[in-house]
Length: 207
Image (cartoon, rainbow, N blue to C red; front, side, top):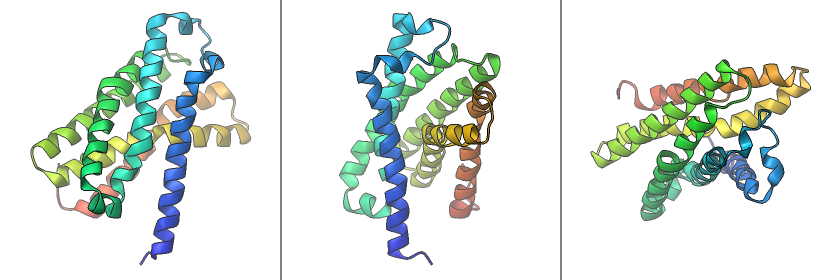
């Protein structure tokens, strides 16, 4: 059985990663060099920059508040805040970050593989979040939790991407090859973990 100290340590580290990456995403508002990773000049287009801001601002909000939604004590003690955060999370993804991410994916560095990987990530993220919102509106709390686990697993792609890129660099994998893999590796394994959590918690429930 997990002790309270271990749970607090785990949640603290989990929150540290989410908030850290969230603040990193927001830092793009103050850095012109944030666009330097684009190699085809597309970053000079105003539409691309709008999509970029939508994705990073919305993603930062979703990541920064989303992790709190799974803290049982927080949810029990601050149900109103939990609901408000939930609305903010949905709005940040559905109206800002996912549409922005899909547009950015169309111009992703690395060619068709990365366009497909990041494009599917954006679409699945949008769909899971919509389903989570629809479920809670229908009063199905269990289905809502399952869809939220899936949605946040994709949200955490922002964290796993930034964890694995330096690891692969240390392993000596060239940047272009690493980025080809990360277009899928940053979110697909997260979904396998999400489904494992769902099966453990809700089996034999289905959604």
